[in-house]
Amino acid sequence: MKLQRIPFVLMIIVGVFMSACTDTDDSTTTSKTTTITRFYLKNDSVTGLNKTVFTIDNDSNVIYNVDSLPYLSDVDSVIPSIYSAITLSAVYLNDTTLYTGKDTLDFTKPVKITTIATDKKTTRTYTVKVNVHQVDPDLYEWEGIKSEIYQGATVEQTALLFSNTMHLFVKTTTEFKRYESVDGKSWTASTVTGLPLASSLKGMITTKDEMLLVYNQELYRSTNGSSWSKMTSPTVQLTRLLFSMNNKVYALGTTDGSNKIMFESSDKTNWVNLGVAPENFPVSGFSVWVDAAPSGKMQAFIVGGRSAQGTLLSSVWSTENGSYWANLTAEKEWFTPREEAAVVQYGGCLMLIGGKNDNGTLTDTQWVSPDYGLSWKAAEEKAQLPDLYIPRFGQSIIVDKDNYIYLIGGQTSSTFLKDVWKGRKNSAIPGFLD
Image (tube, rainbow, N blue to C red; front, side, top):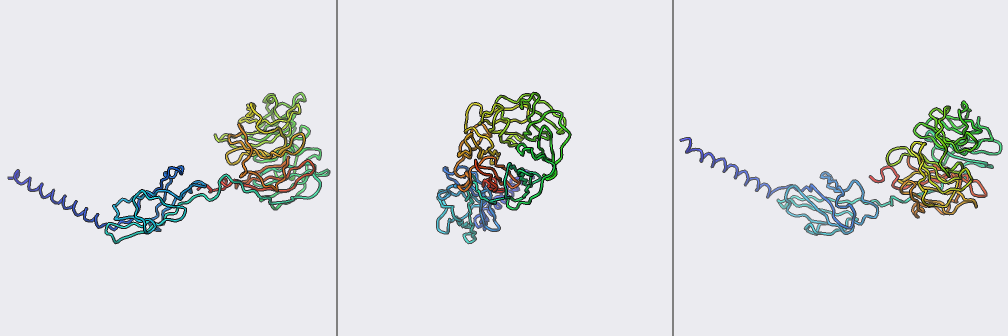
């Protein structure tokens, strides 16, 4: 008897299952769902467009890309791809065009997408906003923000960034003065004490904790820029400080009057002899910049200047440890030989500004290296300084925490300049690429 009842039970189960399936199909047919679950755009001519992620806000009924498309991306003729987890009765574009999946639309302005549920009564209208960067990321915006920081005759000047403050040091025939600023516009003057008037401002450097200067083979330090004191005499004869990197200070010095020995120190008292500087390494008039390389390691660059034999150079030297140096431009002279230029690592490249040759101020004032010193080209128009900027040499260059470049002072063949120029590449603005 039990064997005869099994088919009947199975029939009941199958019947219920089929009924459930039928009920599901009926409910799908009369669904009120109108949501879009996936959206993207297609156009083979627009690089990366089909990989752009769009956010679908079903509360506000807005579809948009958080990360803006690159500058000049052409979205006036693209195909939208629209998906829903539940079958929709119809989708209309801008109220009138029935969506087929092959429609080309202009997304330079908001586009309406209206979805109609399978009950043919429930609707929802989305607004699609395609964000495209409207500002050229490679454009530099420059402005002169201070026409004259100070008045009076000048013998030397140099500016440094220390403790997030700009310090401009000015040497006159009778004294040293210091001017400090946090914005490049307002400057406060103070008198400098403790530095011999015969000392030169060239070669002044900063470490994490202090400012340093060598004069007459003696090392002077300051923690505020105004009060200077002589440190314990170094164990070697220093002639010029180079830079501070990785908690060490590097300098040029001598053991025989040649001014060609490289030294390294962790405490500014005991100095390690690193050996003779490479052939044609500059000993004066060079430009220095220290920054993190793409690898994350700190790297120092020394550009231009004059060799111990007095030769004007167009070389670019680089080191990661102060001991081993590479002449990055040994095979080619990319820019004309110069001294007292300004070099900076900025916006994914090195930039060289100004300088002078044996005849005075140069006219080819701006060069850039996209590969960190290996090759150089004249700066494109979008990076060039305005016509009102006077070509110069001996200017100081500073980059602040907000990625602004400050060009401070300098001189022409006939006069010292006391102005400040401020600039920034658009892509260096925090959040610009978001």
